[in-house]
Length: 168
Image 1 (cartoon, rainbow, N blue to C red):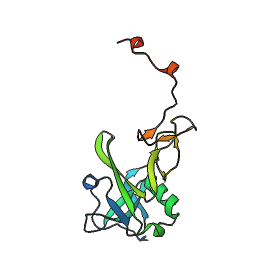
Image 2: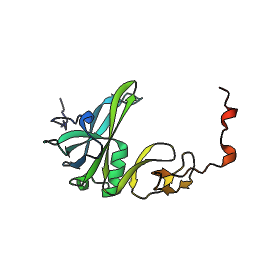
Image 3: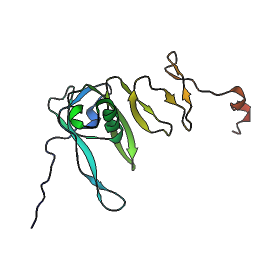
Image 4: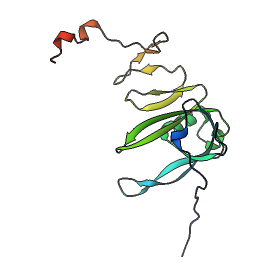
């Protein structure tokens, strides 16, 4: 019988529920694709990108699956070789949500000088700080307004709904 070498990931996995937004982190290993517990529509096993991460306040480095938003941001910041991602300062951002009806956490690792924002279709992306925000559904960028901590919507008075026109 012919055997193939397996690359089993050993050690503890991160508990995303214990992480805090703004916490610091560093990747301490090369990121590698490993088989996940999920299958594609065609029945093939999906992979997940896993690296050992050292989180501020946690003594040991732990296995962490990196989502596509994070890997895209890391590639933009440090290049496409995950060896170059090691030792860089990253900031933790965690979102709690429901996926398939189950409560779960999404973890994003944001490089220094980068921010997370939505693209024109509402998907999260990690981009260099100062990248213009795009109005959902268009390619029009919106100016930032630091006084209100967001962006200015371009809505004219004629398009606003009047309270008396609401049927309830």
